[in-house]
Image 1 (cartoon, one colour):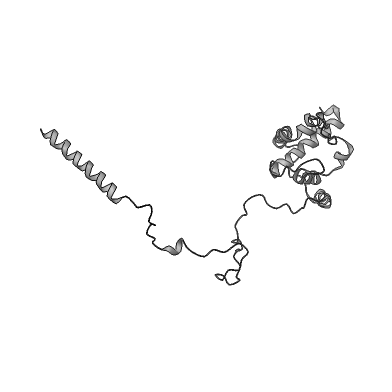
Image 2 (image 1 turned 90 degrees about the horizontal axis):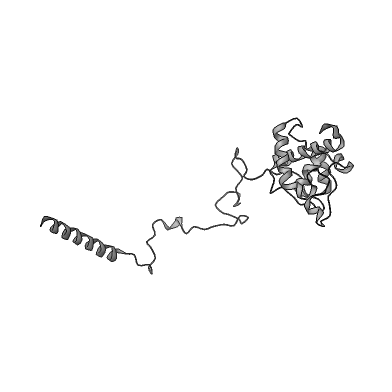
Length: 195
């Protein structure tokens, strides 16, 4: 008998909870109460609009000293032939040709991004070129060998003629590594005894 009373009591509590939930359920047609409405409804300013909140009336604020920018750092060159020549004079490959890890990584990047047009050995005989797309100059030819590393980096970064830019696909360090690998291909092509 005790068990029956306990179950009836639990049933009554359950029914009371359901009634309370239904009675206190929010009316979705009425807006909620707002506490501190200034947080939700404050004036906003477009990036380049005048802003009276600051002494210089500029909405955009200067970065805090010591902060690091997000994204890739600017290169300081444009996609022009003049800047490509300047890049060849100013930029130096940070990796040494006797760095086996950098060379191995360059080979991987070359295989992923360069082989379709330039081919396995850099002769310009990749699958894309074999199917009617204009073949690129061979990487071991006189023209490519004479291009400084910095200029080659500029070409990989900004593209040139039929070659697209790879700045968004290949990191800055990997672009230098692939140039290192291209130079090793050039040496093998010009001096076959090094194979």
